[in-house]
Length: 73
Image (cartoon, rainbow, N blue to C red; front, side, top):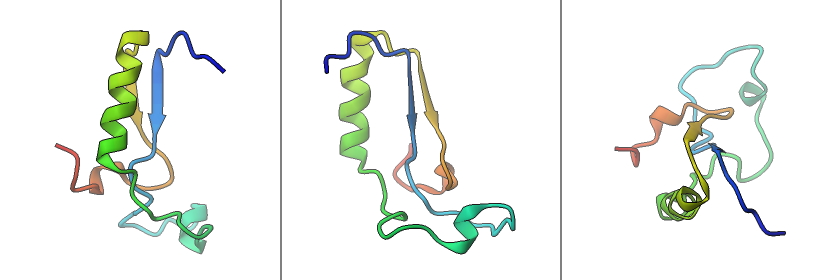
């Protein structure tokens, strides 16, 4: 598969969350490895490779709170 154009990336940086919302599936746990962090080296590699393909937006989201990641600057 060859990707020719990327306008948006949706990345989950960290599955960690500091609240326990009853409607959230994270409050009851996830599969093994869910709380592993997305490595910053991989984040930079993915973004750097997507820029020449037209990247306009990077959405930091998912089931965790992305701003809890201490690696984000």
